[in-house]
Length: 212
Image (cartoon, rainbow, N blue to C red):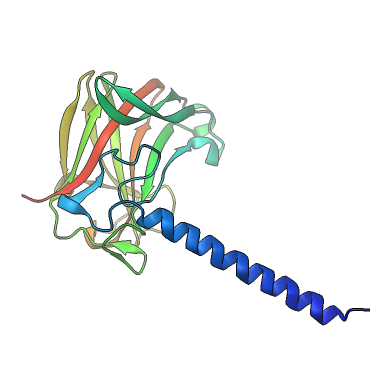
């Protein structure tokens, strides 16, 4: 009979091996694109998938996480000659909901340290978008925010044509927080359809930090 301690050691060894393989896989996917933020570019859709230039993946978040009924999808598209991420869906305010969001973690992109990205050398963010003549938001989260509903945000109008929109950090409004915005502590950025019932349809071709 094989001692139980042997089985325990075997399970531990297997789990450690799995962790190493997973870490190596994540490392490869994160470094297979740019390992620097060239010209502040976070994403210009060169990946051909849901990854940004820096390797982190965009993901769709809906108010379903809090019991809401909004529904949507995030797909790869080619709209009017430009590769883009496309967020489409229906925003519903039922059950205290009311948002769809495509979000990108900034904690692992080139230049990030200790789980935050320092954007204090930049003036703001520039996005290239095309939409359906609706108003959308851009939200930032920093390491200093505790609750998921807290953010720093600004609104923009997305018309049915490609346009580059600059959103200065100075224009961001704190939402449900008294803390000042700290660009040196960024952890996430999101493009959001929020606050009212409407059909969302927004294409994102690029996102970059800019300097003035």
